[in-house]
Image (cartoon, rainbow, N blue to C red; front, top):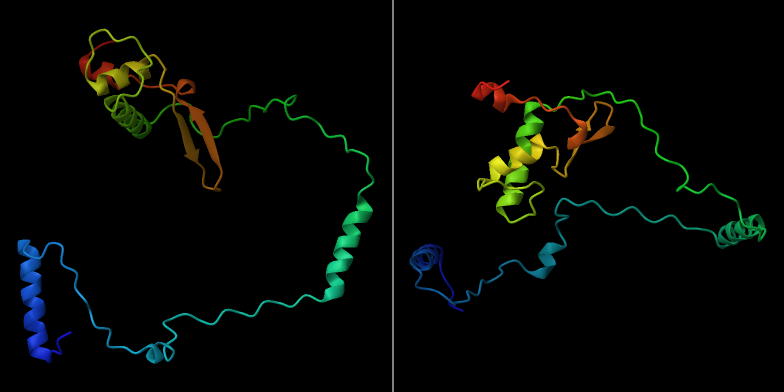
Length: 178
């Protein structure tokens, strides 16, 4: 590798940059000289702190834990309630039963994108070809297979199916329908 002085190095780097930009250096591999020796890396902590030492476990402590686990096992199966019998209770919902205009816009946009990428259509088509029109028809007939997750301030959430929400027909108001 050629040994460069500072100004010559900058000129050569500039020329290489121009040649790369013009596409003249396709398939070339550049060898970059590492000026920092391996010993120099040990002098810097590079922003990382040393890991804390792992706590040592006494040999006798492990045996006690294993013995306690064996004493609890009696060999008799424990009777548990089957979860299949329990149906999830319908909790009272805190959020509105009306779909917001933002949820409607997101659902229609997402569903139209899916339809445009050849997702199966859930309604009978009567000459509609526009994915957004098809998505609107699916929403009117409540056939969009989406679930809306509404987050609450305490970090919990409520899941609503599109078929559970009341959708305001804003497209009818714009057209003048009833």
